[in-house]
Every structure is written in structure tokens, then in C-alpha cells.
Length: 490
Image (cartoon, rainbow, N blue to C red; front, side):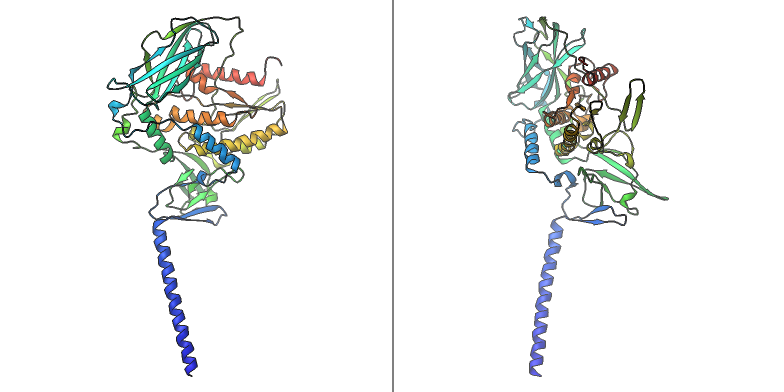
């Protein structure tokens, strides 16, 4: 009997110790949940993947592109692209508006302007930036655009800008045609505004938000969608199964994820800037303002024994589609689709959301097949990694298409400059688009595709910058595109 009583006491002691251990573990887990956000993936009743978050003090959004798995080669390429796009920003603290770049006080000088130049030679222009107190700036980081042009000839070309990080910039031009050639230099954004744009790019990737309608029978719900969403509600995971392109929507309260029927732009976030930051984005003051010359702003170019210049042209995509056109006389079939989300311009049925890479994988290709791609503008508000991932999938599909059908012609239209105001600058600044354009050129270099250089010719043309260029520019784009499709020798 004594032995039985001893065993019972031992059992009770062990049970008490176990309960204490369990209590300590639970307390530790609760404290951990208070500090961190825990994510889990489950499948809803429709079979659709859903991300569920338990939110603590962390308010960082869930961004699908941050969780992508890259090969060592892809990682090296992405790091190289991001390094190449690192803007040379000055190491200075907050700058008052009066000490920021003032285009009206700044000036440029044509070097050797008294000399005559020959077609094909180099022209150099020195730009000196001053602030609103008419004092020279001692650091760089401004975003300048420069061009040479002859309005009577409707000719133009873009210069290469070099930042010396001391308030001085030099622009290099290649003189491509004879006659009187005029130089124009503009301040698109001061370095102080670029710092704000960088912050928005990194910290506010959801400043353009999207929505989707979910419907089943008489029940319908609309929820917000994006590449990055806050972690405070369960998410529907619409990541493309083939390309891995991430896309998420908040899960409807009463409907399954599979009931989504469309995609459309929700709107633009307001109140993104402080009063001090807004001063760096003023129309007619420091957004895309001309910088005057302190002397002659033109040179005379002497002609050479040369053939007519090759014309640079631009191109503009249409909206959602799909569209279909047939030319029976010439046996031409034309198809069009918009790229997959994000899409800002209108509502798109879910069944019509197609990623470029997936469409390319369905093309047989051959000498009678021409593919034209334009994708950039709708990515201007996202971190650069989102655009890199999208282009990486497209490039892989292009390489596979050219491998199986080498005679296929692939033409890519680059980004183009557009009109800017205080609000547009925060979402579609030329500085953002310049980054996207640089990434596109680097990633498709050596792939065997043709480029319609919309970026350079938008800057070079005498017409005002527009997101959707005027008809004369669109015609030039089509002419350039057709020169790749039907070269003169054929």
C-alpha cells in the first residue's frame, strides 16, 4: 500500500512539472505573437489558396516579389541591375526649398560654340545648377533631360548626361544632320524631389491600388488587390502558377476566392507628401522646367557625303482587347492583348487576364510571325524588383520562342517621357520610367530582339511630352516597327 501511495505522489509531481512547462511555453508563444506577424497558408472551400495573417505590432505589407526564389544567376543579374540604377544622391540632410535646385537661376553653356561642326561629330554642353537664392549648388543628383533639335526639319536627338556631383553636369550629343541645330536642357526633378520619389518607391508600393469584383449568385463583394497588401486580413493568392507572378486580393467575407470575375484600378492614394516635400513638386517652378543658355543655344552643322538619316520612331499600345484584324489580300492576321496585372486603365474580366510570358509560350513562331511587346508604364509605382521579375519571365519566353523558331521577329517598344504635374510626378515620374527603361534595355541586350526607341525620340521630338504621343509620333513608331518587319532588301 505504501508503494502504491508513493507512485501516486510521484505521478502527481511529474504532472505538475509538465503543466508548468506547458504554461511557460504558451506564455512565450503569446509574447512572440505580440511582437511578430505569423503567416499561414490554407485552402478555402473553393480550393483556392488563401494567405491568413495574425497581426501584431508589425504593419509591413505582404509583398509577393520579396518571397521569390532566384537562382544564383538571376540573383547576380538582379543585383547588377539594381546597382546600375542606384541614383547618385548627395549625402546631405533635409534641404530647405530655397536651397533646392532652381531651373530659372541655372544655365548651360555650349562648349566651342563658335566653331563649325560636321555631321557625326560630338557636341558638349556644360550645365551649372543654382538654387533659389541664386547660389551655386555644391552637390548633384538632379534629373536632367537634354536634346538637340531642328524644328523645320522635325529632327531631334537626345544627349547623354554626366553628373559630376558638384552642381555641374556635362551633356554629350552626336550631331546627326546638317543645318542649324538648337540645344534644349530641362530640369525634370531637383535632387531634393528625387529623394522623395525614392522614398515613395521603397515605402509606398501600394500608392496605386486595384480592386476585383467577386460574385456568386446574388452575392457580390469588391475587395482591394495589389502586389503588396497589409497583413491585417486573409488574402486570396492569385499568383500565376506558371510564371510565379505574384498578385493578391483581400479575401471576401462571404465568397470564395474562385468567385473573382474582374480586375480594375481602384485609385491613387492622396496626402503622400508633407508641405515641405510638396514644395519640390510645383508646376511651372521645378517640374520639367527649361534651363536657359548663358550664350548661344544653337550651332551650325556642315553636311558630309552621307545618305539620308535613319528615322527613329515611337509606338503606343491600345487598351485591353483582345482585338483581331484580318487582311485577306496580303494574308495578314493581327492579334492584340494587354499584359497581365497590374492594369490601370480600365476594368478587365478575370478570364481575359493573360501574362505576356504565357502568351509567348503558346506561339509557334516562324518567318511569318512578328511579336510586338510594350510593358512598362503600369509598373512605375512598384519597387524595381517587381518589374525585373516580370521582364525575366518575358525574356525567358522570348529566348525559348527564338530557339524553336529563330526567324520569328520580336520587337519591343521602350518607355517614353510624358507630361508631369505635382501629382502625376508621384506616380508616373519620368525618373521612375527612366529606371524601367534602363532595366528593359539591359535585360534584353543581346537577346536578338528589335527596339523601337520611344524613350529617346520622345525626348528629342519638338512636340510636348505625352503618355500617349500625338498622331505624327505614333505614325513614326509604326514606320519604325514595319522597317523591322519588312526591311528594304526584301
